Length: 53
Image 1 (tube, rainbow, N blue to C red):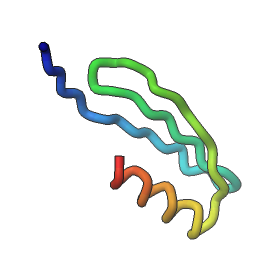
Image 2 (image 1 turned 90 degrees about the vertical axis):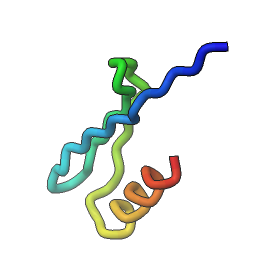
Image 3 (image 1 turned 180 degrees about the vertical axis):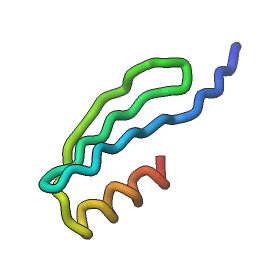
């Protein structure tokens, strides 16, 4: 069985009304994107979710 290790890459556009985030792997594989509101609570939730991946 082979084992591959990739780094999770996250990019965030910090807009003034909404933030847009894109997620992928270090090998170039695109995993998806999402938006979240521009406020302290939602940004903190985004950071927490990225720490627990």
